Image (cartoon, rainbow, N blue to C red; front, side, top):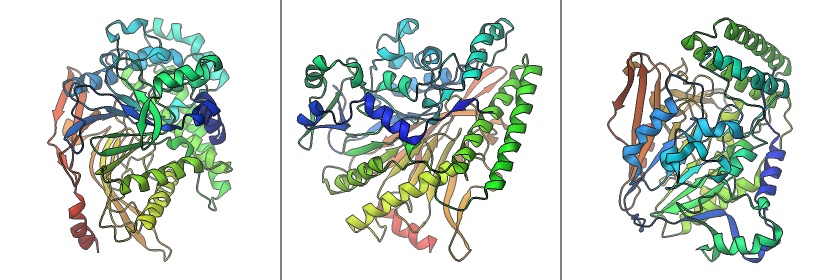
Length: 525
């Protein structure tokens, strides 16, 4: 039984295009690029190649914890770094379980109220009226697209008051409805031009799409006034660094292959049996907060694995070629622009990760292959076959409920020797690292295994530095002045014990620089 439903890729693309009036005649006539935004930052040193820092969090949108709130604590952990931050990137899953509008107040507005204009009165803020006082830039997660199965929605709504009366501290983070196929996220964060009447559209575009980038108009992002995103995927620039934000939900169609369908069906049946066991256990142990927390974590994991298997069984999904072309052309243009000193990607699904439930998932392998194809194409056009220069300097993702820092080895592709950071441990259930260890390998055509990535840091469900407890996390990213790009990551970690929260201060991690690649390549060989 599915607790949630995931819309087909074609429907996600179509619905989001309708919401932003994609390539409407009034937009085309003004030569507006609907995938770019220019951020207004008065008083911020955003000059070319200046030093700056930004913050990252992800997979945070839960309201299940009633005695303590991991999302709120991580939000408070970010506050000392907030005022001078150039921006914040959220790697997706803003609201669990199904991105419902009714969940935004407790699961997003309440924990992040300091980022909102009027946040001191957060109880009265409607999700469709969010205005940020500093750039807060999310990407869509899978839960931001989900809808709730009708029978589950009715059960959740009818029993919610009773559960609270009985002090069942962990709810399933649902209401009566789901995300409207990403509609709730769109109304909270995106510029939904379909809500602007045709008679007002010209005036609206002339007021808010006034910024210029390479001879084209684009959205003017104004903290405290108008803080909307132009599209489900977008691009912006700060201090000579181009940031590409992707919608990976339309890039995870299973790769063509010869899956054993009988085996997949058997795996699906086993997941159904395990899901039934969890649901029964929840009814028996509902008053025990710790046990209920673990069961809810297991239930969410089973749901993800079930949807992954269903995508493999019903493999007919379209590929989002338009977004891949946009990324390919954008990276090429970025490399050819002398004003740009680096490139960062942010997306929800991680191409590389060692978290035990995600490392070999079809979603993970699918996004890895599609990103590789784009990077290979970029390298061919730019003549970077030697891989002495990175195509991308850092890739940020979420989805896996952990904090992980990885680097790829010589993969034979454009993603070789790239830095990867998974930031998905900011509030929802945490997960362990896989038992096979920190090295990821791939099978080659000759049958041999080739190591393609190594995990240098993993913080999650059973973190040794907090005696095996749950360690929630966010990330501070520092970019040094000048070129080549120098990147420093500072993990911001907190773990909860019976006597309250404990904060862990880690030393900053200096990522390998481009001029170190030759040494790394030599060592790998």
